[in-house]
Image (cartoon, rainbow, N blue to C red; front, side, top):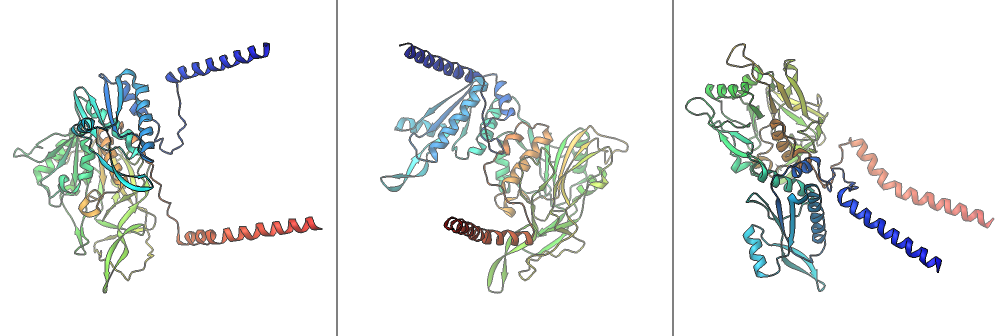
Length: 499
C-alpha cells in the first residue's frame, strides 16, 4: 500500500516537473542547429527586427493539407520558423494556416496572389499530378507582400525578413543605376539582380541632366559596364557626388572583349583617369585562369566543350561582409586591380582573387577559343586582385586641394558578371556578392547574414592533377585491399583456433 502511494507521488512529481519545464520553455528555449549556416535558427538581425515592430504583422499561409513528402516536411519547417518569429515578437507577430480545399478558399488564395502549383504525388500505386498551394502573404500597416511559392527553405528566413523589413520601413534606401553611357539595361539583362533589389530598395535610373547634375540623388550609385566615354559634365557630377559622401559601386570592363568575334581591345571611358586620382587603378589587361568555365567551340565538323581561360571561376575570397556566404563567382573577361597605388589615407581591402594558376594578357589580346590547345595549361603570376573596397576621404578630380566627405567605394574589374545575356542566370555566389555589396555600401548589414544561408552542397576545393590521380586510385584499390586484409586476418584466426 505504501509502495503504491510512493509510486503515485513520484509520477505526479515527474508530471509537475514536465509541466513546469514546458512553461519555462515557452520563455527560454534553445535549438541545436547542426547546419553550417544555421539555416533553421533565426539570425540576430531577424530577431532584432521583429522585436522592434511598431504594429502587428500577420502572416497567412495558404498550404494544402495532407501533401506527401517532401512537401509535408516543408510545411512543418515553415511552421517551426513562424513559431520562432512569434516567440521573439510576441503579440506583434501572428500567423494562420489555411488549406484551400474548397472553391471559396481557392479563390481567396488566388486573389491574395498565391497561385496553385502542380506537384507529383503517389496515390493508388500511381504517380499523379496534383494542384497544391504553398504560398503566403505578409500584412503590416495595411500593406501586403506575397511569397507565391515557398519551396526553398534555405532562404525562407531571408524572404520573410526582407518582406517584413520592406513593409515596416518608412523610407526605403534608393539605389541608382547610371545610364546614358552605353550601360546595359537592368530591366533586360539583369532581371534577377534587379528583382532582388526591388524587395528591399527603391530603384532609380540616374542620368546627367541639362544642368550637369545627376537627375536623382540615390543613396548608392551603381556604374555598370559603360561602353562609351562619359562626358566631362558626367565625370564632374560623379566627382561632386563622391565629394559629398556619395557611395558608388564600380563594376567596369577595362577591356572590350567579344567571344563571338574573338576580338578584344582596351576600353577608355574617362572613369579610369578619375579613379586613378582616387588611387584606384584598374589595369588594362585580361586574366587567364586555369580554373575556368568551358565554352562550345567548333572543331571541324564537331562542336565540343573546351576550357576557356577567359571565363574564370573565382573561389578565393577575403573574409569581408561583402563576401560572406559567397563560394563561387563567374567573372568573364575580368581585369586586375593594383592596390599599391592607393594613398595611405584610403583604406583599400582586396576582396576577390584569381587562382594561383592564372596569368594576365596585356597590350595584345588573343581570346580566340582553340579546340587544339593544351587541356591542362600552366599559368603563372597569380593570384591577382580582381575586386576591392576603398574607404576614406578622396581628393577631388576637378577642384584642387579639395578633399571630400568620408565615403565608401567598391570596384570590380568586370562589368558583365550579372549580365544574363553573357553569363545566363548568374551563379548564386554572384547574386549574393552583388546584394551584399549594396548592403556594405549602405552600411546596413541587416540582411547579409541571412542572405547567405544555404543548404546547397559545397563545391570541392580545387586540387592538383597528381592529387586527383592519388584519390582516384585510393578509391579503387582501398576497398579491395581492405577485403583482402580482413580475409587474411579471419583466415589466420580460424587457423589458430584449429591448432
